[in-house]
Length: 476
Image (tube, rainbow, N blue to C red):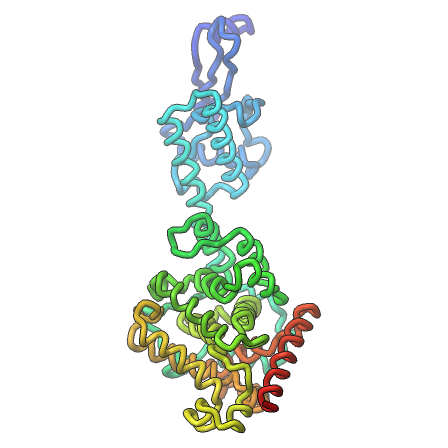
């Protein structure tokens, strides 16, 4: 067949024709005679002896080689939704998928899913096509997830982009000595306690998928109302509106913040926390925070401090150098740090010779009570013991951290902490991680003056009301 008429006649007589050009095998699918509805579609296939040339062809199609190396292929001009599912390009293996750009992966997957929808609408989709193309979409998503996870967990950290000249030398020395050397008992590492190499990236990437699935399912034990989901969209912001969350959740801001953060940092699965115990425990915490009907030291304050701790961990990158147990400890400490607060100060208890003051010998009366009452909850009721699956060593280290952090929220320790930190910055090797974590929790505890004015104003008025009630109780 040398002239055009013969070529046309040849295509009418056969369904397809295969030929080779420069080592590539091509199959041209043509209309059969009298078939006016069918459309021609160019296809190509790999020659068994031309594996390397096949890779070159893919490069040519994606624009990775020079123009002269790109073969001419008849393009299908139909919109994606009109292309039958089995006509879409096939990828040979997951390895080939990994080599393909994210954009092309998404595009091919979108085409396949759209074509399936059209076939379902027309009643033309078969079970075989449906299964094949859903498997294709799953393979693409898996390859994208693996590729992205490898990229995010690369050894290079975002902090390497920071110009060293922009950071004071004493701070650089402190960071280097504090977070890169072994710290004795508190920094013991084992196979059971791996570090989060880049927990910030984990929060931003993989956990997001799990959260979206969780919010459409009640299987994990805690359902998120739509209004709560909307309020939690700002959980990574400094001026997070905990009042809106509390209203949306029906006065359960602490429960949803605590559960949300444990989920985001993957602590529930890491420490095998029973979901039923977690829900029971945090609900008991909320009851304790409501015990004295405080205007300020209530469950909203606890939720606000817990969210602020998360912001400090997440935005500063400190979480990258903490173990999962240390992250769990500081979030736990924030949630329980004012449990069963009486709405009065330590000095009030001392001056009135209250039972807690007598019990704790006038020393950090409230802070001692917050810790003791919380651990009684865990110990006396197995149904709310969220620490039940911690190893003996982990339990001891966790408790040591929690005690130190909560005791440091005593305002009488404020200036002592500031002085100690300033001194430690001059001698970076002397700084201990528990001290740094304690300062972070204390910072979050008194952070509302640095937040948006409307939030700060509301917190201030609540605190004034609480002080006024204390003064009234003294006058009675």
